[in-house]
Amino acid sequence: MTSRSARTTARTSSEARAVARTQTLIQGEHGIGTVRKTTLPGGLRIVTETLPSVRSATFGIWAHVGSRDETPALNGATHYLEHLLFKGTRKRSALDISAAIDAVGGEMNAFTAKEYTCYYARVLDTDLPLAIDVVCDMLTGSLIQEEDVDVERGAILEEIAMTEDDAGDCVHDLFAHTMFGDNALGRPVLGTVDTVNALTADRIRRFYRKHYDPTHLVVAAAGNVDHHKVVRQVRAAFEKAGAFREPVAAPLAPRDGRRTVRAAGRVELIGRKTEQAHVILGMPGLARTDERRWALGVLNTALGGGMSSRLFQEVREKRGLAYSVYSYTSGFADCGLFGVYAGCRPAQVHDVLKICRDELDHVAEHGLTDDEIGRAVGQLQGSTVLGLEDTGALMNRIGKSELCWGEQMSVDDMLARIASVTPDDVRAVARDVLGRRPSLSVIGPLKDKQASRLHDAVA
Image 1: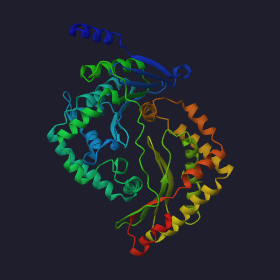
Image 2: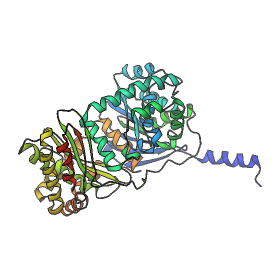
Image 3: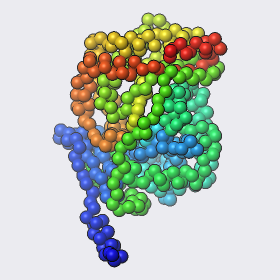
Image 4: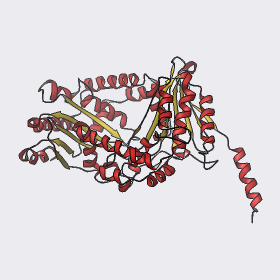
């Protein structure tokens, strides 16, 4: 039997050998666009992209937790917690947190999604140490006090009410429920009035301790940043807070999903006195790791991604039946969605749905023309580059890539993958995705006779 002193010596020796591992993931020319990653012994990953030519920096921390990690009783807990981390720590009040970033002209915010949460601050490069200190303090030192939980409950209920007032936003939550039903992906990120009212400070604290371990986190910084300085500052902040519960730990692997069941042919209608009817007609898409996602991106762009797209031309330009009409894709770890949204006068709902369904069926059977595909490839390449023109977008790219894929892809590689999509690739993914039976979600003031005909769109 190994003695206690021998076990202690062995553990101490192992900890002494554990060092941070740094890799250059993307080598930019003259250092510009270079992406580096350091994994600390406690499991925290730090990824940076260096752009010496800019005067700003965006610092963010991504948490491997989203609304799909909630039980039905905890629906809304991830978003609730996002709010609470701004309410104060052991060293800063809520006012101190916001005032620190405001005083240097910076911006600070956060967002919660179905599979991750992100907290970030965008500042001048000279103020990056302040942003690191404030955001790391929020993530490691949150108090989650009873009185703050009670106060923030009111703010979140107002946010839910605001979303409910915007039918064009609310219909996307309805479509998720139509497709996924009453499981984690089908429930709203904000939670419901009942679940938010039922959440207590104790339950939220337990959720925080479970999901905000350093092994669940990715730190990302982009702009005029020095990777090694960022690593030193982040490591010091986490160590000072005692955040590394285990001195040697492995980061959490990217999410692999749970084989979520997706619906076909379902129709859900919420009657509401709105000026427009808001509709989403869609079907299962692709998981975010599916290699066909590049072809699906081209298909989506050609079908409903711009003013020259088929749906925009057919529904708006030729017939004037809707002001807003577009298609979109959402990819999760194990599944995805493809949807077509339109907002139109209630009397036009069936005409709009027929045109959209006809276009989906036509493209599924016959594909797109080579000209449409070529135009979509160019549009997608241009929008990809233009969408990465600020440090916030770059931080989002490298942080989400590390958390969701466990790898980085350069912009040139992304453009090459888009350019490599062939017409046959697009036609194949169109047959697979658009050939499936769709489901339908509608919010609006439809009369009984109109509502009874909605099933025609998914027959």
